[in-house]
Length: 245
Image (cartoon, rainbow, N blue to C red; front, top):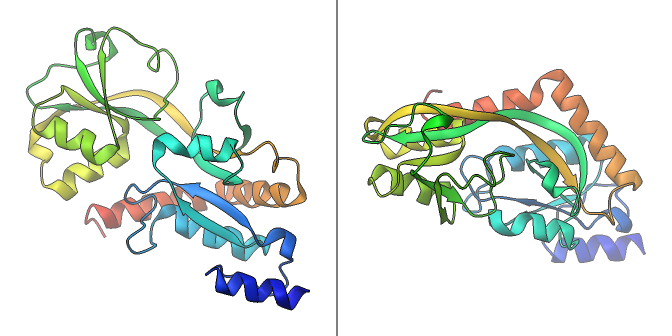
């Protein structure tokens, strides 16, 4: 039976480490296709490295599913993926199970050079490019003082801000700033406004949470955060992305 499952796994293109049972061979993690988090073009990025490390440390086979940000939470909730690692707000608690914190990141605004936003108090009447599915917590997720121009991802948010079509792009500061370097458009941005500190959290489907495999993944991620490995992986990939290494 085990040999049959190994053949099925190989035919499906899933790398199954020796000793992994059929029960654990089908784990999937939804990750976004935003450089340098996940890359469907060449399979490199922060999340692929993290999943590879989780596979090595737990012995569990984990398949990466590249998923648009707006659909990530839905796919975990529906059980298409067993888990993801992404920004957490309490508004998600009725849809997925909160696991452990992977890392903490500053989220905020990269402001177009011709717009005047020095802090949250200046948001009234402004237009901000906001990626569909992005949550950074209250009061900003439901703030009606400014207009959210919904876009399909960070690339589009940055392009619109660079062109002056919106006042600012919102999201992970390190991602926004790295994209400005890649685009060669740092001169088109002015103020850097941090709005909040957001935890990147392991988030699990209800059917998977509480399983022995989930406990193994939680333990491995906790060890990565405690040792500083999670922060080191993020810093290294962003340094490479923006040409600083």
